[in-house]
Length: 96
Image 1 (cartoon, rainbow, N blue to C red):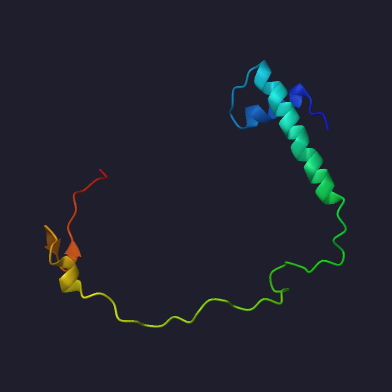
Image 2: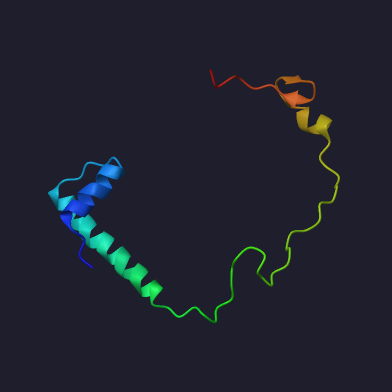
């Protein structure tokens, strides 16, 4: 599908992009290829395909249950910290 130069200019203006004539030709071809691909997808027969709507799936929850596990010893972690305060590392402020 051929995309007109005016359409390319319009899309570029929506995206706040400045494009020259050479880029307009390139973009016209690329946008045309994208639309042709979308047209191919529209031609697919999906009437027998499984629905992916929320609540209409045969999948089950694959996440594990939250389990409390032993963690690292805070004192060992903070042992070599140059500076600490109330069990936390003290680092230089980087955001004003």
